Image 1: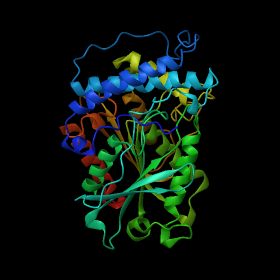
Image 2: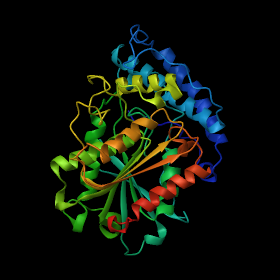
Image 3: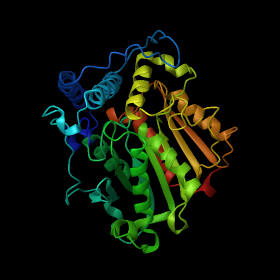
Image 4: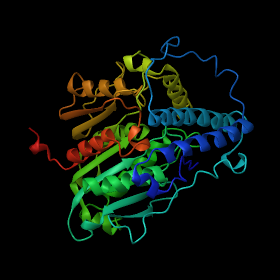
Length: 403
């Protein structure tokens, strides 16, 4: 189910940095989709009675919210509510995706890759298989024979929503590729609930293997942008929210299985990683309702899990093996001060430096006064610009360059 959120916002509007069109878009689509989804399904009668693994609800922290943060709250609420209702329609009512009400996704359409007259970044789409496709971004200044770092990027959306082809991610990665001067491969993977986790991991691995097949003109690698411009000695994985979760698991799988042609992962970038856990952490109390929604969303995405300490969603749980298999020498974790997932990202960083068994160089960067994936909702605010610059510096700095 190629579900897309917020896609009718034009890339031009996004690039100008105004969060007002996005806030209006969120509200309009939220009302439309929730209304239609509610007509399609009734939540499970047992859903409300399901106890939280972290105990009773705690009072919300009282703090003033900006327009961008309010938009973010609406987005999170829509992700969980719509995802859960659609899952109920499919699973409990025995419906398939094709049997959902006509027009449910009409307002959620992707946008094409950049046209030939784009002044800064060229982009185009490639189909890898019936399940997986990608959108590539290459700065036009690099359309000669020069080699640049490669970032394989996995979008967020709780494993249930968003797309590599929607306007939000197109705008963000188009701008980021120009800033960082890197070749970005944005992965379109199958989404839950129609394709529950671990389908997203399988598709993401297929995309990574396809990228690596282009090393030294390897057989099966027929994309000229990758063969001509990819510096595989600087191959990175990255993503935001659920995409950061995927990037972590891809690096772990590389550690266990390796990659073709002896290719190594130079580093990973985890932006506001979607990790949970049964233990209570301080950032949970920033917005307990949002925290519970994220827990419910995970149960929709991966109904076969054993709980929030499953290694798929909690890589730092005491019962989970250490991070020594993480197949990269460098990690950058980006967190946001007002994100309910903030301390999960910090715990991951602490585990890397502590008892995780991983031997590498880890960095953490925090945005002050911002919430989950704020950079997508308010892309030109000072914190979003600073975060992009921190990631760009990380991608363009060799391990030996670190002080």
